[in-house]
Amino acid sequence: MGAIVVLVVWVSAPVHCTAADLAATSRAVESAEQPAPVDAETPEFDRAAFLARLRTATDVGAAVGARVSIAFMDRASGFRADNGNVDPIETASVSKLFIADDLFFRDDQGEVDLSSSDTALIVSMLRSSDDSAAEQLWNRFGRSDIVGRVAARYGLSSTSVGTEEEWWRTLTTMPDVVTYYSRLVDGSAGLAPARSASIITSLQNFTASGADGYYQRFGLPDALGGESSIGVKQGWMCCVGGDWIHLSTGVVGLDDRFIVSIGSRENVDMYGGGSIGADHARSTVTAVASALFPPGRITSR
Image 1 (cartoon, rainbow, N blue to C red):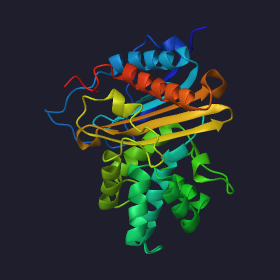
Image 2: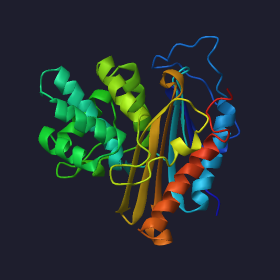
Image 3: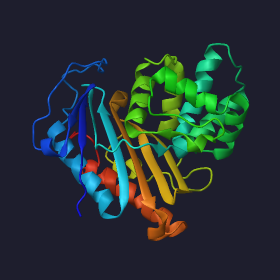
């Protein structure tokens, strides 16, 4: 049976498209967020073509048994869209963004006093997805309260973690991840520009393999070889509820114009919980991202 795809399209404020509306022209609505400045040199983004590819990318995942969630934003216009799958998914290492954000914000507020060693842990946690660094910071600086504070400050209504849970069990949605990146970049959640820039720089300098040796270029990095600027926070783990979990999220383009978040669940029974299953799950996310952006870049130039 083919996958039923529901698209949700925003121009900042949401307009819902059901399966019956897929062929209809999306309606523009008043923007609730301020888009990034646009000038004559800003490459145009073809929304209609993207929405068609969004359906295709969802089908690519479904064809190999993956339940894929995709969300996207063009900050230059405020245009947002997702594929309708807004089910919560475990963040795995994507929640390391929240740890870094909370600690930088509280350090600036005088609530904590980060040392140079703490800052080095944050950089390693973001660039190389260092679990040991995340664990140290999580345990020392507030555990689940970290996520609660960031979710409140950024307005992430679908992001939470249980009081006794670990950072990797944080739940979120791909639209919430897009909202996080958007407000990180534009500063509307209160993080100082220098701190936001520090986080983005670490993401842009991500290592090809994580601290645990896991290949980190799956998804957006491997699919967007034509982009000169990309910063990502990847997430992966097995076997949660019998699933491989993979996330590829980040900012792309000049001035971090585009935000993309992809989450995938793939049943471990299909390919196993070892290296074969991991390879397949990574390849699935890369195939989905490639279907979204087949030229290897987001705009035509």
